[in-house]
Image (cartoon, rainbow, N blue to C red):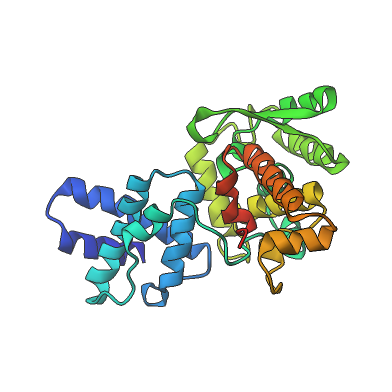
Length: 298
C-alpha cells in the first residue's frame, strides 16, 4: 500500500521535494490504517480518514498541519482510485479543532491482558506504562523507569519529561499500588539502559520494532491512553465516561446529575473539573481536548 501510494504521488507531482514530503505523510497514514487491520488501499473508507484526523488532533498537530496531512491522503487516494469517492475535506478536521469521540477507542481490559501475555516483555511493559499513566508511546519508550520508581516511592508522583509534546514536562500522581508494580516491572526490564529503549537501539529503531510486533494484534498503543482517561474519569466522578454510556436518552450533564443525585450545576462543575484534571495528566492542559477520549457533553 505504501508503494502503490508512492507511485500515485510520483504521477501527481514533478518536484522531488513535494514527492518526498507527501510520501512521508502518506506513509504515516498507512501505518495508522495497518494498525487497524487495513492492508489494501481499496479497503480504505472515509471513516478511516476521519479517525486518522482525530489522531492528528489528539497528538497536538496544528490546524495547518492537520490540513496538510489530510490533503496528502486525499491526493494519493484520488490519484490511485481515479475518483473522489473517498475524500475528507481538510478543513473538516482543522475547523473542528477538538473532535468529540463517537466511538470508544480504548483497549478493553481483556484484550490488554491477552496481548501482554504474548508480547515481548519490553513492549508489554510499554503498554502497561501507557495504560497505568496515560503516556504517549514516545513518553513510555523514553521513560527512565528506575528513576520513576524512586520518585513514586519517595514522592508519590512521577515526572514525565522526555518525549512530551512541546517539551512540556508534567507530574502524574500515584493513586494505586498497581502503578508501583508496573514501574517496578519496567525498571527490572530496563536494567542498565538509560530508558525503556534498549541501549543498542535508537528511538526510531525501537519504535519500528515495537509497532511491527503489535501490527497483527487486535490492539494499538494509543488505545491504552484512552483507557487511562476513561478510568480516571470514573475515579474522579464516580461515574463512567460519556463514551461508555451511549445508551442514555438525555444529554450528558442532566444524565450525570440524575445518576449522582445532584443538581445539574454541580454535575457540570464535577464534569469540567474531571476533564481538566485528566487533560493535565495527559499533557494537554485544556478541558475540551479530552472529549476525543471521553466523549462530549451532548
